[in-house]
Image (cartoon, rainbow, N blue to C red):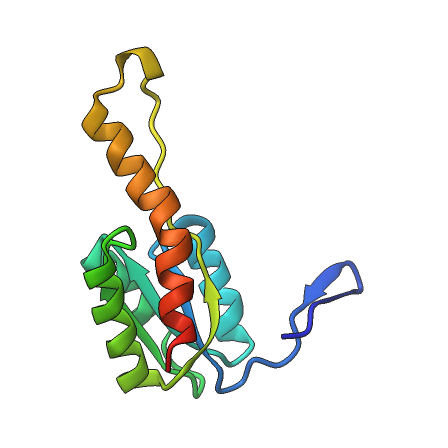
Length: 139
C-alpha cells in the first residue's frame, strides 16, 4: 500500500479489490478507516465484538463495486480470530491489509480494578496484537 501526502490530505493509493480486515471497525476510528478504505475500492471486513454493529457498519459501506462484510469476533480469542479470518477468506479472498484497531480501556484505577478486568484488557489489547496478524499471514 502506498501512503503519501498530497494537497494537505492523505492519499493511500489504489486499494481496488484488495481484501482488508479492520478489527474494532464497527464505530469510531475503526469505522473511519473502513470508510476510507471502501472509498478507495478495498473490500472490507469489519471484525467487532459487537456483531450487529459490525453488520450495520458493513451495510453502510457496501456498494460502489466493493464488498463489505461484518463479522462478530473477539480478537482476544484465537478461536474467534480463526473463524473470522476463515469467513473473510471465503467471502473476500486472501487478506492483504490488516488494521489491528480493536482495544479496550477502562476508567478504573489500578488499585481498585478487579483482576478479571485487568486480565480481559491484557487478553484484548495484547493477545490481539499477535493473533490477528499471525492468522492473516497464514493462507
